[in-house]
Length: 323
Image (cartoon, rainbow, N blue to C red):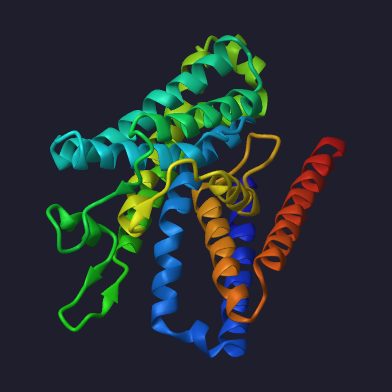
């Protein structure tokens, strides 16, 4: 029954995405350009990766607000390791997800062990990471290698440019593979099943003999790991990364997950749904400016869409309780 509901919800979101894409294409000739599509996809990678990771805490009934500033912090520090500390590029690359895992484990530990509300714990971590992202590199802007510079191959991981200048967003292939792997982990592995079980009934799971603290830490470690991957995608997409930025990225990722059917009360959600939600938000962010709407109007429309998704989720939960 739950699978059918997720499938139906995904089909609805796909239909909305198609209708929006058609609408923007008709209303704006610039939206139909290939370069616009490439830009949309390129800007979507890092939010999509964050959303995949944060889906796990959300399903447990928690949240991870440290992902936005964490993303920028890890990207700046990693690039600093290569540009200024003289460390090999491969070490700088693996440093980002490692930092994410460490911070994720810390979040999970304080939430599980000291029962600090996830909102407060991860918001505090977010503030700490914002400061560290400026202090550790000495306030320097983060810069990853350019396409023509030493180590410039990192730029081709997500986008390939042919000799005639045509860009292919090959990162889509990586995203599809990651979505498939994480879907299997969420649905078919012990970690995934316990993630859902924590959100459904944490007390009952503990009484059945499961070490719940361990799996709560793992859940936030997964979120941190994907924040680290998003840090790389962000750094390899943009020219520079400014210290102290990133606040708001986590809201886009969480919003995408909720629009994609991840329950705000925990116990339900899918990686595919969260990914579709991010695509919908990215489509709005790219399409609305092309039809002449300013930033404030874009935020209002995106907020309304998110509010509707939460209202539908709450109505579904209330119906489930009364039935």
